[in-house]
Length: 280
Image: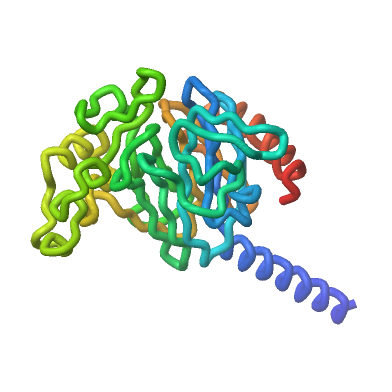
């Protein structure tokens, strides 16, 4: 009897140890569209993210899991029209003419960037321009786990010479490097180091709109964040509301109240359905 009890205890300890190690070796990504129009998020490399591309209607969210060691970028494509075969075009952020991206998106585009390790690095970058507001929130982690990105919309206050228009409508704000292609704006040549590449009139405009995003190549101190053992919520056009995500097999919400509990139950059901649908 004692032997059996001891064996059961060992099995249980091994189970919990294995489960704990498995949870620490992955990160959960919740991608949310709070914009007023549909988006077509893209991810590279996208093996863990439905092949690198999918659609999100307004108010819709989707959950994915990526392993520690994954390093990549997430962005939104706008104004897309894809056929049933996944071929089409977009106003911004296109990676060629396909839904599931295998390459980076066309500028201008707002980028959410990640490197997952024992200490994760993440940031939102406007170095390649801006097409939609993006925020990254770390959930359940420890360290400098601040929110990156912005809720401000640079399309509204973009300098005229940087505006990208489609059909007479401003759809994005290009970077000064993209428009003028000079060493100063692109931080290259004599300007290719932190001492000589300094903020410009245009990067300052970007920084005013998005204080915790990269506005130019060497904008590190206020733009890159680190966090250990966290999950991440990437929100397009973020508004103030409760957001929940999974961590260590439990749901963690941004605040604890009745609405959060309701949202948690709702997101649990949605997450399970989405995961089953996508084969995760």
